Image (cartoon, rainbow, N blue to C red):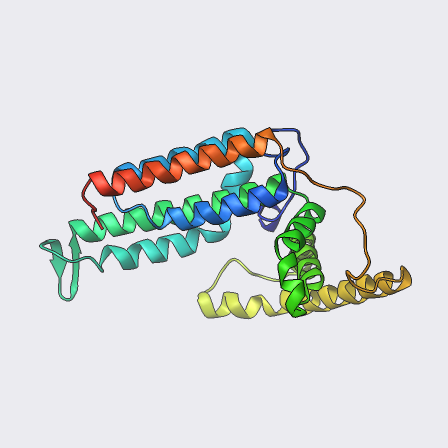
Amino acid sequence: MVRDVAFGQYFSGKSFIHRLDPRAKILLLIAFLVIIFCAFNYFSLLIVTIFTVLCVAFSGVSPKFYFKSLKVIVFIVIITSVLNLFYGTGEPLWQWSIFKITANGINRALFVTVRIICLIIASSCLTFTTSPTELTDAIERLMKPLNKIHFPVHEIAMMMSLALRFVPTLLEETDKIMAAQKARGADMDSGNLVKRAKALIPILIPLFVSAFRRAYDIATAMECRCYRGGSGRTKMKTVHMSMRDGAACILTTLMIIGVIVCNLIFTAVI
């Protein structure tokens, strides 16, 4: 069900990751996403996986919500893994016509699967432990140097924050519309792929109408409160780097060093 999708939600808490500076979390996430694709052997991939598990443990959020966030990409993971399975080079272990499975293909499929899962879990960890307001402030502060070239930093950060904020709302709205359509006799679970796609049309139209209505209401509310962009605005809460952020940076740096060392010592398998 749509209500089971947890990606984009925020869970209030006082865990180690919750109390990190949002700017540090964004920068560390970017560094982690880069290093994920620099793991070329099983030892470096193991380090990335262990670091991902530690992030889940330190976030204080139940692992079931991370599994829910993975539901969205199950189909993508399966398709990508199957394609990489037949894309490998070397001596075939199994072959039928133009399709062949090699050891290199198996390694590629495994690495792609683990990389995508780690990527989604790490991204979910950021949204689970950081409120939309904190994300907006962090993005705006990180992009502040672009103000010198008249880049609309505040407006971009505000749009990203609103988009994240309404992901759970739109998912809940979709679930309500689906329930209403099924109560009226709509069949969305049977038939071939084309019939199922056509059955989604009665859901997409009211969903778009609802989304535009919400956007209009938000714009009206912001105008009523005299919102005029980021010029001259102050912050009710200011963020500061602390010892926790330093510890998180050290742990991430050690993970990056471990991946690099493993790549230098051990032979790449993909």
